[in-house]
Length: 185
Image 1 (cartoon, rainbow, N blue to C red):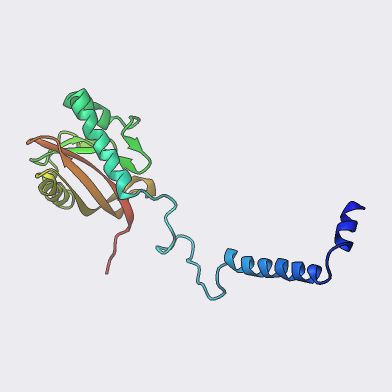
Image 2 (image 1 turned 135 degrees about the vertical axis):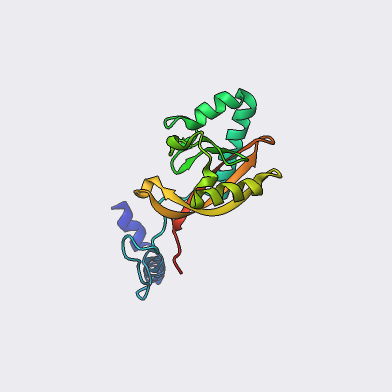
């Protein structure tokens, strides 16, 4: 009864004003939660779909910097053993640490452990990446775009942005994020 008393004691015109206010708020918010009628949605599996996982450049750099700090704290031998460990602390989602000597020898690669100890410059596709990214990081650190197999997508060839740092005059380490299918245009 108390609630009815308040409604009946309201000033004339208050109820229509409140009703219009409520209706206006309702209409204003309904358009905010729906796609516009002419918005085309990408087909499932198309290259237009939004990536479900996204790794920022800041996250990539922080990951590589953490690996470099690990080398400085634990030493090269222990660090390379950890980087090669497929269940180690330097595999996080799509991120993993790889390490190469400036002569092209693979020092660490947890996704392709069979390549450790091999000179990658003999492989035309991968050798270009190893040589060119090595040249990018020779003066400290840097980014390099390349193509590489994505183990999370049945080893399909995808575009990848790598970031690496020079550890000393002999070797460097890095990681990368996949940015999508290789453009064939």
